[in-house]
Length: 314
Image (cartoon, rainbow, N blue to C red):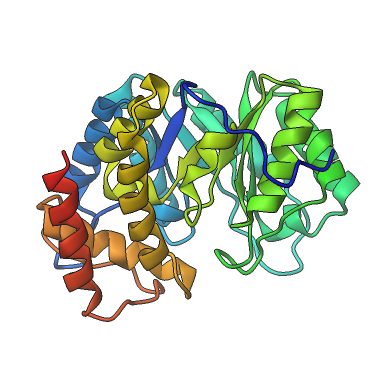
């Protein structure tokens, strides 16, 4: 299922956009719950599906009670039209914990939301065949879920599976799509070709913040970058569906933002997002939880310039 060297552009298609929600913090280092609620609301109002308890929302760093509160708040704001990371906190060498995944997925599904199977040490230590079987066992108890390939540039236990394993995941009836975060166009094009041949209704959700134009080739998205400006992403998506050539200029500006904030070390994009929120008046501070890599203060000048340009083209 190798793709063409230059895959066909799929014009005037409707794009499904899911946006990972950043969790803002107060100056004192506490979660800004009003800010969380506001950002879930503005993401949904823009026409994107909020995605909570993802890497952008610090799911690995939040206390379990706080992650549960984020999920409850998002479900209340959206009426359940939300996707959420099903996260299992384990460590290197720990076995795959099916019961823990089922518990996490059940809590999400009970709120009307769709689970995203967040990677873990145990899950990603399995063979390709074991990985597919683990997802099938999780999916047997769910009406729907979203798979997740997360590269090691995001988390140390990240993994991009083989194309054969990806095809096995596509065959799981309750798996409606999968987020692909390899930051590789070629790997994603391969998945699009396989999807088209095997199950056309399966959603390839690009997580490539360095190539957000993957939507031109048939991907939908679940991005961290879109948390910076959900309204701009939604406007860009409408332009593509309408055949508006303005799509390209707006996409170029958003991609410039992505190239800036997703440079190495990649996890530091969340500090850039916190600074962007502060610049937009969406948060009172650029505080992030302990353990998040920091960006230099000089990023703020570049972010302010991009924000001004986004507001000019609104």
